[in-house]
Length: 210
Length: 120
Image: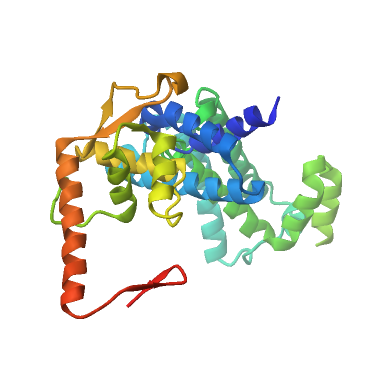
């Protein structure tokens, strides 16, 4: 692949941030203009790409804002695109939240709970509710997101994709935040150190030591 | 929409000025704007096409079927030209500048170019 083709591919990725309707109208022209600009460029690559990225990102944000103004709130939070995973995910999160809230309210356990205490605990129901259900909710919603991302490959980085999957993404973030609070920040270090290498045993030992 | 009382933004003014001479495609507009503004205004494709979209919506410019330079042509290029409304708007803007300069002279403000900078 030569430099021009590579540069055009990179610029194409930047253009994918624009709304679909805008791309349909202007993408070919913008690609052609980029090609002219690239071939005529006399700036250092870092300055050229820096200014180009700034220009493209600024334009994309502006167009996304223009587009979002035309959306109603009903369209913005789109239930129709992801109902089942979302409802099941929320359903899984609710008992966990309830269990945690009641437990904290009755001072059964002090928040934030460390994973070490939890893994050593004999309360199976507590383990199940606090860890397994949120993990299931995350897995289910990530799977649903990937399923919907396959036909939307070109639009993955676009705000419209985020908007259409707003609640699913929100639920994943909430569940991840939940686990982070639950396990405490020390355990997050263990997760970063061991889980990417799939060292589950190392992770458990590290978490127990904390 | 097209409000003649509102001053044009500098990029919009220079784009209309570039198209007042002849039909131009995107890159040609970018180069002309940079030249006309003595390099002060350099637009990237993102800024330019956002502006073109707005000027099209306001009816100040339109797409042109005329392709002035067939030897340098490419079907992906689109050419744009001023509409009569765009020409009128550009005229209004130029008159605004003219009146502002005239008023400054009436007030005794003299502008001189020193080292490439205009100072009063």
